[in-house]
Length: 375
Figure 1 (cartoon, rainbow, N blue to C red):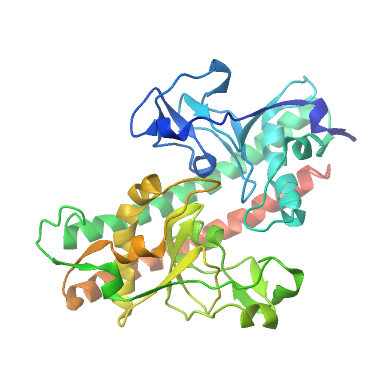
Figure 2 (tube, rainbow, N blue to C red):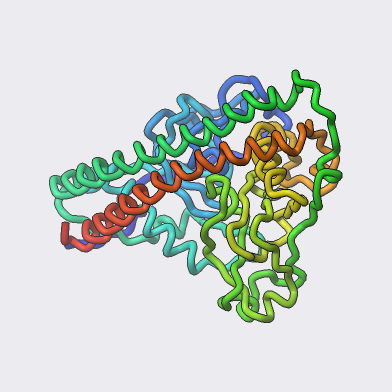
């Protein structure tokens, strides 16, 4: 089987540096930024003029070029391609677009794993062009892509079921407490900083990714781990050494992690003791039910907080903003009842997650075999 460089087979369009002063809740077209790639839609619009070559359509394959190097098919309709996101399309009859789509994740992950960084990892177009792809005959590519499409469809259905349970959590919240913004039930407002303890994670050493800090036995949670959790953080991708732990801080099980950089106001509750850097805030309360309540309450505010966050190299908010948020506080007994109902939902989600993990393993095996010529 022949291997060729992607640069010989694809066209890559890098997004344009649109003027962020012209971003808003309405405008000509939605604008696709890094955070929009995986979720497949954008709620931010651009109000200025634009070159038609940066207009996306459904089905376009996009790659996020900062942080985690994700790829996804765009499903948000006509939209504009912003900087640090690229569109990749086949330019040769030798390469099937769906085959390329399924090949990219493993190749991008391999690059991500060896890419050095201080705060955020960056991917270049040149690096993408230099990727080598195994190239069986076109009919074989189409057959492989069809097999992987069907397997991926099963995973998508299971994820949709889990997402519906996430929506159920918000529905239960609204039923019990009312809208958290209008507060129709008249709960007393408090500042979030008065409800529990809010503090930033700690990573004193510079550079943060010095090799001697990493690779030990102490779990290290990053913003991506929080953003990609479904409310409860059950795994991690990085660890600290003893030296890394010494310059950081260990947070206990039950801590609510809140992202304040890149991914804004994404949340997840730790199910194990872990460290995290100062791009994540930890929230602790006297009663675990309050932590569950605050996590769900923040899910209603996440988009507004993200949209209002200032942006330079990446979006961020500060600890003072979180501490000063007004939160309606129902009686603790009602919070505990809510936590009990959420626990029942989480039990069902656990069964769905177990099924999804099996499907993920099957899919990974199929992918591995496919690009080794064994499928």
